[in-house]
Amino acid sequence: MTVLVLLLVTIYLTLLIHVVPGDAAKTLLGPRANADLIAKTRAAMNLDKPVIAQVGLALWDVLHGSLGTDVFSGRPLNEIVGAALPHTLILAWTSLGLAVLLGVPLGVYSATHPDSWLDRITAVISISFITIPSYVGGLFLLLLFAVQLKVMPAIGLGVRGDVPDYLRHLILPAVALAITWVGYLARLVRASLLEVLNQTYIRAHMAAGLSQRLISYKYALKNALIPTVAVLGIGVGNLMAGAVFVELIFSRPGMGTLIYNGIQSRNFPVVRAGVLVVAFLFVTANLLADLLYTYLDPRIQLDKTRG
Amino acid sequence: MQYVARPANRYQQFLNRIPVLGDVLRRPLGALGFVIVLAFIVMVIFAPLLTPYSYEEQDIPSMLQGPSQAHWLGTDHLGRDLWARIVFGARIALGVAVPAVGIALVGGVSLGLLAGYLGGLVDDVALVIFDSLQAFPAVILALAILTLLGSSLRNVIIVIGLAWTPGYARITRAQVLSARQEQYVEVERSLGANQTRILFRHILPNVVAPLLILAAMDLPVVITFEAGLSFLGLGVRPPTPSWGVILSDGFNFIRHSPWPITWAGLTLIIVTLGFTLFGETLRDVLDPRLSGSRGA
Image 1 (cartoon, helix red, strand yellow):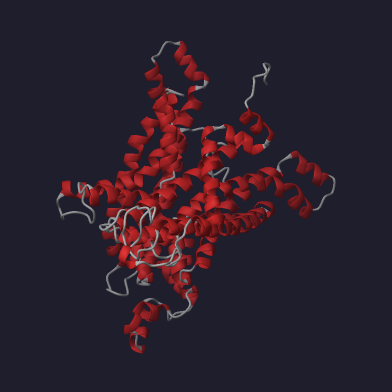
Image 2 (cartoon, each protein chain N blue to C red):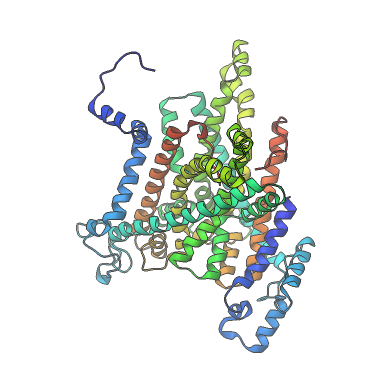
């Protein structure tokens, strides 16, 4: 199923060029276009072959782990994507980590202290956080900490090889991406933990005299986190989407910037490679979440009920 | 059930007389959401009455000012009044979101009904196509299509509609599958009703109700999505005052004035919050079983 989806994505991306009004090679070359260059570019992009052959070649490449070649620079796209991907992955994982570190404890506290004042504040904060789009969060953080207070670096990755500097440049973008998920996880964990805490086995533990803290963290949380795991799979995909904005706002290299620049310069091979890799990550993350899900809760069977 | 008659104040009595909205307004967060949504709608309808300025009138000498008596929220880099741009931006936000969600709803429901009801190979193929369209973030799909089509208000609406269609189709399909098993459908079938009648008279109404709530809750998501595309320069074109365009202009002058970003960002957050609070409360009131589930 996963492989099929990725192959279909490849086919769409190849066909997409033919939906463009005008000649893709000509648009790519812009004012430099002359008949000779256009013919060369068309050949390099396989545009001179029949559509079926183009789709076939694209699938062949993908199945062999090659993303093709950048027509502009002649560099293999694996290399270009390989240079951008780690920055996006580091950004996405850091913000996911931040979201889990902040969101899960908030949710646990709310569920174990229902209707306390902190629970109510958390409820309002979570909803507000969920409604902050990553680009607004990013712009506000940039405005406050980099432009007004000048305590954080505004743009880029930092000095090459300087790890503390890299981390300092990572803070604002990662927080901007994490904000939505902190709120989302807090609400999700609260809801599922409240449900679990009402179940018989938890009351049995209480009757046996186990401490509240032990019950909450050791027995209840484990089951309450199952829905969270499924949502985190989807989360990786959403983080990728948010990364487009955050990378542009903080001028960070990465998949978002790569795809955006590719689109701006009409460089379709780059766009195709970038989107394909993002789709691959998205689908893999969902698959991993599904597998983890069945491992955590053996009652759930994969595949039987799709939809 | 209430056994003891409590003296109800006039506000409570008033609420009791309104069927659904009364229940929403009784909850504090629902009431807050309603007030924000109402304010937003007032902005959309009465935009020209709310400001003496036009959204495109430039006044270069007074550019990038902070809030003042003349310009309540300040001015942007061309000296345009920010309050006027934000008020008129509400029209763009709603003018994109409603038709876009409409397209997704009509397209998604039709495809979902077909896939779910026909079943078999059609269903399998449809499901794979829905999955593959949702295999990458909607922003990237929209960016790619908009670059090809060129950015305009109409294209943004079409692209958002397309991007949201597979989600609605999946949910419709799932609803149809479960509705098909229901006794009332079996009864109809045994009475000799034909397929079209069962599909449109019996299954469709049951499928549409939860989808309408979902569509209402998707409005704020679509509003932020449009603003995001416009922020990237691929949505609504300047000088049309989309909130995303205001943010994008503000980003270019971030070192000179904090106001455009601050106001446009806050507006987006408040409007989204209002719609979300109102939508969630409405959902809880209308159908408590749905609480916590969210598609797409």
